[in-house]
Length: 74
Image 1: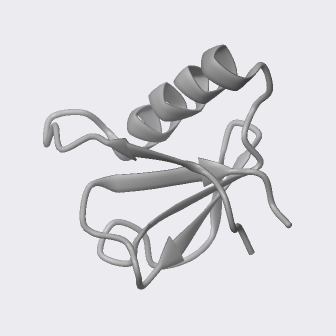
Image 2: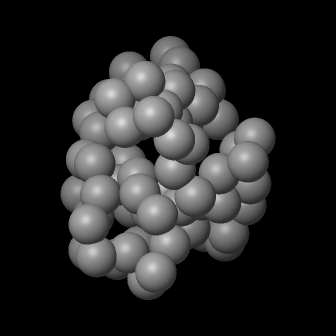
Image 3: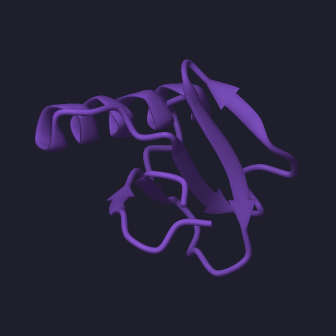
């Protein structure tokens, strides 16, 4: 579970999902100096847990569409 994180919006329909996650993770790394462990997304974007690079991506019912919540797993 993640309590704190960075919220990222990417509603570009032409950009592939994995690229959206990677761009958000790269920004997180630049901003905080470490790669996020976890990215939560709306269930409509992802049905089951997967990995994008080293980041675990999980569906979450509380996130709005096109939002990515990145942070450290607690």
